[in-house]
Image 1 (cartoon, protein in one colour):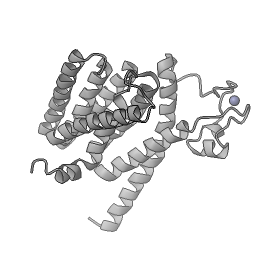
Image 2 (cartoon, rainbow, N blue to C red; image 1 turned 180 degrees about the horizontal axis):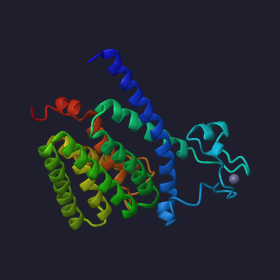
Image 3 (cartoon, helix red, strand yellow; image 1 turned 180 degrees about the vertical axis):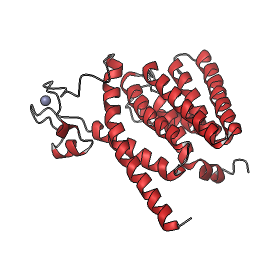
Length: 266
Ligand SMILES: [Zn+2]
């Protein structure tokens, strides 16, 4: 293949994923705000939380609108939280990263959906300590469905079966932990573990162990740290979803390098 043509293709893939990542991130902000409030995510259009004015097209441009308006509503001056552009930037960064990590392959869309879903679920978990089924189920079915498409398109049936088994294994382990400690691990985490195990299982069994281990490690280290510096007390609930999500994304991005570093298997 002509290397110059293929590097141009890669560049275009990264740019497209970056732009769509920003747009999807903007949609995720709507999901993060409305799903816990049991509001429709399609209508009405976005409103200012302060004065309820419906936002025009110019005020709805991801990141740029927030920067140009310096984080304030154009009509009433209410501060608009920096988390809106941050969610958009994080989603775009993850999408560009995944496009660079996987390239133009059939499984890329599954991982893009997964990453977007994990951003929304992490933010909702931080806000409410819940992982709502209204987000978990669409993310799970879409990710799974897209992996099935990829498996069939490439004839990678072994990989597909491993993804299914990875999901089932993670679900089983988390279910046991949930039954032992229902307060420490909610059933939302158990449902989430199926999706994570599936996405990691597509890559390899070692990715399943590594991703979930990193999730527990991050949760334990950061949870302990928050208690040590007095942000949280031992009695506070620390949401587990964001750590599981971060562990999985870390394993997806750097799994092979990390496994080499740990001399974990050969
Ligand atoms: Zn306003």
